[in-house]
Length: 112
Image (tube, rainbow, N blue to C red; front, top):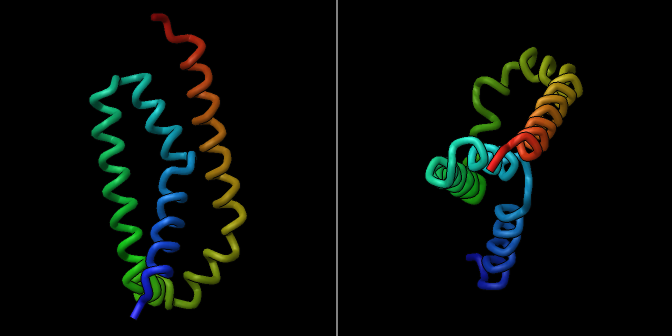
């Protein structure tokens, strides 16, 4: 059985990860600037629900079950993913950089 200190430290770590700024905060700020507070709150609620769901999956141990599913158990698929992982990371980095520049540009060109 999990003791209270382990549970509290896991909860604190999960909270720190949840409130840390990242791509979700940048996208939420972009939506707030472009579409207003209401759309941003709805988007943030969706992000929060997804984060809670992902945390519950990881905490329950279902992450290991999902990783061992048919998609990743096929040897060629996993080898291909490992082979192209650095390219995938590069594309994701470029997309986030473009999103960041778009956010900065929209902050400077927005008229009040």
